[in-house]
Image (cartoon, rainbow over all chains, first blue to last red):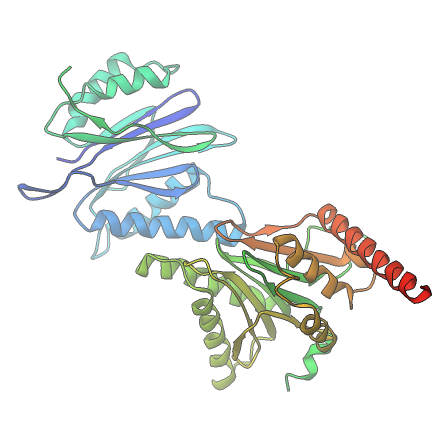
Length: 191
Length: 229
């Protein structure tokens, strides 16, 4: 089952997604990247119905780029999140709804880091931490118990390693004022 | 119908270098009370392509918007950035459609489109209101375009565009042939391979203009000395 997590720190957002692309009981890929770069400082993490995920995420991605070309500056994370939500909501009550669950993470010059939780019913919530998938049941309780707003990046990465389920590895990325940074791919080992 | 239009159009120059493409435009001097937030005649269509237009600014806005959407649409369907030729052909086709359907008038703009293809080749294209387009190594449109083109034909050599700076200087020299009052009325944009569009600040332009004038003086001095000896 697919898994996404995002945690907001004092001046960064840390996000991770699993790397499995499955087709019923078969793992087709174990190195699949579920993050879409919307702009220099915004990432969209997308899971859900096969095909819908890439189709929707790429559509949002290109529209965010178009905004940049037309206006000379990039959409803010809050604006991008609301734009995404509006699109999802418009399609929801059409004949072709998108069944996707999203996390949007970004860094704004003025407002700082931001993490937005969105589900397939087009609910949008700005949250200090969020997760999607079966793994969310387990990790949200851990985060509820231990999350402190001032946490440093290192302690948060360690928290990631507690997530179980049969997911062999995760892609982890950090967004701060300098942009998007790849962190080491986390394999789940004995701990 | 379109040949007479040239005289009203602001001067523009495009140069295709080896690792750089340069667009230079004559800036219209603004009224005293008008804010100089530059009326940009040079616009980015995508990260690797940009265009300078001359003619009816309002018409240009429409064309540029359609081109920008097409650039992203191309990326979405084909997962590759547009080639400069592709987007030029798109713009030219758009213009041509308006010359042949009823109830519509043609777009009153000529455009110079520059950029780098995905494989790193620099390109320069020119379109006009009829919808034709051609590739150029260096070109000028607008007032006195003929004079400038002749200047470029003489001075565009492999040497003269050897470095990025040389290509930029050549564009400025070409513009200075016809632009009155020098550096203040020039707007310059460059794209280097794998880098986004950069619009030069007026300070940079003035430094380069000063260099060019110095070189001219030195040339003139040398000639004098040769004559006297």
